[in-house]
Structures are given as C-alpha cells and as structure tokens.
Length: 186
Image (cartoon, rainbow, N blue to C red):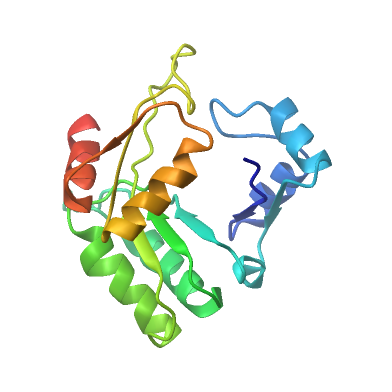
C-alpha cells in the first residue's frame, strides 16, 4: 500500500531541507526521501491548511522535561490546535510522541475537539515511536510496534495503517499501557 505523506513543521529551514531531499532523521536515508519526493509521495510544508483532507495524522513532536522534571506538553498542545483548526474530515489521529499515561484520552482528544468545535468524529490511538539509536539492524520496519486505540475501530485502523510498513504489531489493552511502555523504555 502506498501513502501520500505530508510532513508539517513550523520550522521553515527544516521544511526546505526536507523538500530538497535532505533527511535529518536517523534511519531515513536522504536518497529514499528524494525518491519519494520525485514519485510525488512526500512533501513537507509549513502551511497547516495542507493537512485538511488527511486520513491519518501522526503526532510526532518533542516532549522535553521541564526544570521540575515534568513532561512539557506544549508541542503536543500546539499540534492538537493545528489539527483541530485545520482537519476538515474524520481521520485517525495517532500519537507517537513520548507522554504520560492518559495523554491521548485526557489531553489530545479533548484539545482537538475544543479547536474543531467537536463537529468531527475522529478516531484516536497511540503507537509510540520506537528507536534504538546507533543500531543499524533494527529499523522502522522490523522493530515491533505497540499500539492501542481509544475504541476497537481505532485499534483496527491503527493496525491497518502500521501493517502497511511494519512487520510486527502488538496490540496492548489500552492507550495508557502503550504510553507507559514508552516511558519505561526511555
């Protein structure tokens, strides 16, 4: 299955480098990025309106710790606002960012609904990013991926999405379990 991917970022320099085929992501080769751009399957943008008709939105933003050692969710909150204000049809919203248990249920879903006026029934799920820095034998495709949706339909949708490019998917009992596993792994 082929996906058309739009990478949204507020940083113009990052977007320009990506559109020039220069990857800054470990495990994503610049040659692959250039190939996907040439095939019309990838582009980066700073215009949030470009996500309006997306079927799947993946939140993958930094969640640094504050000076009090609490997760700073301001990037997650900004992503929710961008999604809520610009996504104009039902979609699967997946959080890959590191966050505490309950983030999808108690923060992401209510925030997106607040900014969209609650008019659109999105599905929500968690599938934490899993990387082993410096290892070349483990990558996005062969690293087992945990996932869970807020509803059975969301769980099925997130599984179908990741199955198109990941070998091993492990459904856990709730989004909170997936969020906890990421914290333990970090």
